[in-house]
Length: 524
Image (tube, rainbow, N blue to C red; front, side, top):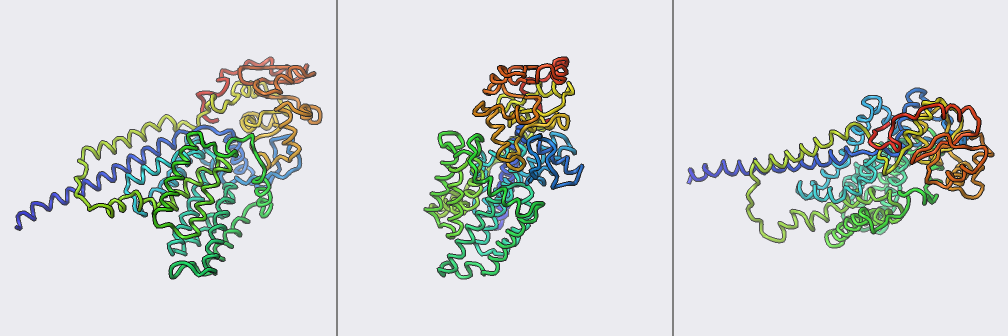
């Protein structure tokens, strides 16, 4: 019998080796896929401002300065609640231009996906099943990862909060003590920290109810001192920002303002691709939570809250996807994963994939990663999605025109990057962080051509206007004295006052050889 045993030993070792090779090949394939997905980056309308403002911070070191870019901001203090994210963006830009911005986004995105993948595996998923679930949820997570925006730090921070709460639900209470450090950074990276505090408070309230009712396993819920101390420190950490409670006042005010003109603030339309993915993920995770052993009441309530949030605003879809994968991981693995399959039917010996197949899978991952190389040039300016008036702004820059310019909301920070300080804008994407209600209403009336639309011209020192030809104000200005068109193309028109120095300068300057909408260009 000894020869037979010795003959089988190499086979068993070879089987284990091929199994490990196959698992690593799957990891390489998944990594390659997410590297490719994350490399595809579009320049958001606010990216020019984010990098410019981050550069100002490095140059001046002043976090509480007045706004130098708009002639309508007045004496209103500029609460730049994303200053730390913008500093990171500028550092990436200074190091490697547009490539640095894409790489920064990829690092944060891969950290988020990697933490999710690790969590799914620890809750019973095989590598391939965890990868499939991540790919299913990624269209929702990627909503804020298609561009370089401070929101990407909110996704990573929100995930860290969820992981800490899920660990605490399993009795690992010490994880709660890391949350104050998360909020200390988060409050200076993006205003989305309010969402993290919200679910923390909801969870803590549910834990307190559990303590009062006396329900739960032995050793659960946590000691009251731990719960109160961790939550209190998280709130105190959010005050460690340059504006203290002033930041809270701003964000709580703006969070309750309806923003129908911004698509990501409208309720999620269910008859869309993202809406369909939301419904599928909601059905899978909710079904698993109901049919399998559910988490504790606090986590179940957190899941319910995040599931409702996308019905209020599209921008909450990534937060729900993160919560569904973190809170629903163990129930999903028991219902659909490898452990459930092992419990239903006797285990059958399976032959591991041959080595050549594993190498082919890994090669596919390397090929996917290689496909990302062209996208590393920088965030693309896709004219058909978010057209930027590249030729019109290039002409203004070349002409040396100066003054105060009424500009389209989405074009404000693009104009700031190229034209400041010679030209100041009427408004831009910073919204309530720098503009008062009157200035905001004045700009809206002007570009929609409603009410006293010309107040921006008559009551303010406006001597230039850069408007889309698709807006009502384009036709209104063509019929208003003393305004005249000094340049126009298929996208935008530049207006100046008849006989002014700016009108003469712009007309005497040859338009640059740039795509009208910025199509095929990369940031900046």
